[in-house]
Length: 235
Image (cartoon, rainbow, N blue to C red):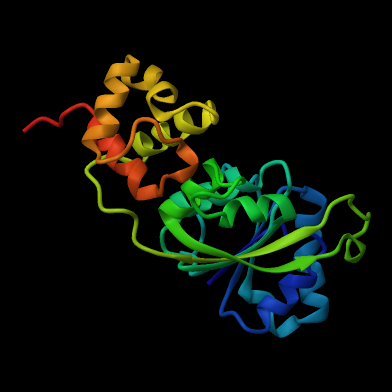
């Protein structure tokens, strides 16, 4: 089953219905959502029963009529990363995806450690999946024409890092490390750890250098730090 986010007028929906067993389209605009079944019924009447439309904010959807296996999305620029992370966290059944986002966001999602644009989106995406940039979409193909280019990002889910820390604990370390990007880990994580000394001890216990910065760490490195900062679990 294909989960499509932001079908709009349904041009891509028609193409998806031609190859997918079922398409669930999530559209926040009620007018567009109401019109989509009519469009499909007029152009592909034999496939109309294979479409489900949800009028909803993708950030708030937690239940779908079918478990998705593939995600295709045209994501609004201002909420693209939160929506994508929500879909990855909420619907573990999907293993592949292709999303269109603002070009700069696409670059951040696929950035590797050590890159100047590597940051919170890069690490949190890496927690769930491998991502790669597979294309650029010029603004001239849209109406109205935006002022930015869009990028296509291919997503292939993989197993999350093996760690005793929870996702929320790891993401808290990621947020703290990049919240003060120019600071060394011992300073950036001081608030989370309770002090600079405690942060240094946790980073060292994770086998890392407290003087390094978040942009050089992998998602696995962040998980190791989170393990050291996490309170011990009851035996």
